Image (tube, rainbow, N blue to C red; front, side, top):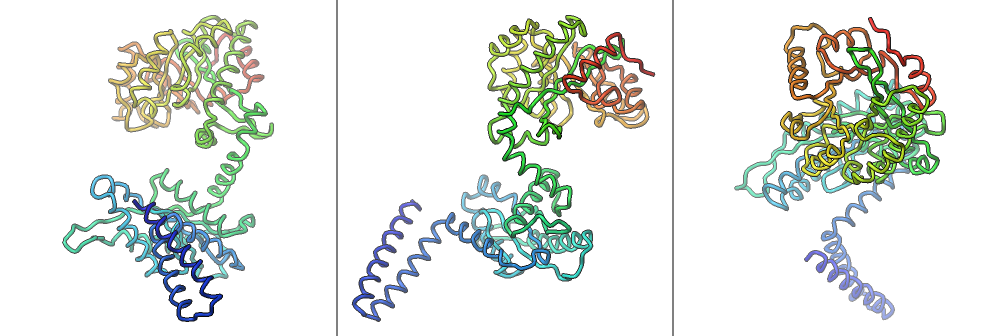
Length: 484
């Protein structure tokens, strides 16, 4: 419907412009003026029916602010209204647009038209100047940004919107990110500040904060992600993704009974980057399945080498982290063929699944398919609010992992300790092994022993090791690890 209207308006506009040219050559001033006015009216109507064009115009307005001579005098606020989709879904499909239109005009009224820009149909960008341009203290600058944004957000959040006088009133929820040049000299344009403010807003949402002002840490993280975005495909081509191995120790015997394989990006042979830092970008580019497959192949190759050199016995287990997409993409027979190509039994290969990924029926079925072929499956427990013991029992998992950060940090008699003690006892009652992850000091280790878990793992014993150093570690501690 709207596309047809736009086409009609565009056709009329073209016709009028052509007529304008014709009449201009015939020097009829009255006709020319009328046609100009009509052309402008139809142009306005055309643009008002095309929100995408409006957004492009707004972003071009932001670009024109690059004539600002001193970026240090300005900061950017990126604000998003987060509950508009709820209104459209449950009340009226057009309600969110109407509310946001009122939010936009209220922001313009409070801040000024030249400082407010549409970025998306639920996002606004403000370009504001610091009141005291002589301040060079970064913390004072951050405080000023936070204070200004807080005032804007309070003003908007306290407003009530009703589309018609007899309708109920609606409120909005907002989240914002701020950015300024600060003490850094590598930001050269308003566009870069907008992107940094946008990134800060996304990190605020991720960390459940209302406002996040970009500091040097956020700035460096943004630079890293920009770099990863451009270089991750090249890293895959250069074979820079490799497994690092974290030993798993049986608490009862103090022996290394397995290793967990962790994805690491050895970027330019100088930096070692954890998967959590680049996983989001790899997922967006549909590369993580390729990375997972390469890590599985390299992990099995190393496992086979350890067996050949007599560093491990035939009961040694290897745990491989498997992403959600890989779990659903890889065919079980492909994994079986891959494991058998290295003369490894599936029962000694365990796939570690994130608790956040087990909510769908497809994942349940994929896990059951792995279990049918005698692969083991483990899960990191209590990482989210969706943890479900019935689901764990239904999927017939092998190991439940508890991170030390989720366990009590002191005392053995408090409720948190009793809860995890109960979970440990329950898990063992249904033939689940329990592992304490992230053991970093002697107190963590003592707590794990008190809970009577089966396995422990963490920096208290060793950080993750590359292919060369894991060989040395397995050789040195083949007969067991000495612990207090």
